[in-house]
Length: 324
Image (cartoon, helix red, strand yellow):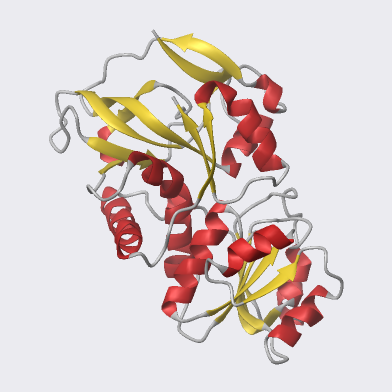
């Protein structure tokens, strides 16, 4: 018998239950995994709260690393003992053991530990698609980045800086400001600062920015649009303050024919070849030292509710892990 976190209703962190589970044997195209480290991400709170509804009862979590314990009959690319990681569906990574589709796994290079992988698969591949696919950051671009000291923010800042972009980071405290500066941000603006768009232009020689990466959502959406230069790109990829309400396309015209996208990681790694390309590029960036993974908090798996409270109250920096 193994242990896992499950939910039977939507709600706050208190709905997370520490349960006994019995993993099934893997089917022909699946493997049985023993998790070593599990990543906690904001999307997990959306699943828990019902913002992104699940069929209940349900497990939780979309990211983990571990070892292969058993392989199905048709699995050719993995064997027992392989160190692997994954991000994506089906949900249920908050578990000591689980069965998972083999074609959604990636092997870990020797230089990438399970903790680093669990801290970087979702956040790192999110940074990858934001910078390489949603808007292709170029040298000398100016990037405005919210939650610059968060798990995705730290990687985005480093990745954009490695390309040669100027990065303006938005944070909520001096402690987070220091961390963001050490991870690629050239300039810092506090999230509660008045005349936000004007201050952004003051930091950028009177001009709007090329791209905004906004993970906050409802509270900052129009503020972000106001920070862009004509033809700039608004990449809205999170709902930390709530979902953005519908807007008229004319709002983009008023601000200089802006581009707007609302991407999600899983649309960029649907095919196995896409997943392998993305993870290869991420691991290469980590191994080269161009980006460093910050693990801010690690908790035992049974304390997942505490991890959710911390991430929702914005008390965390970097990545948060659950350890079975």
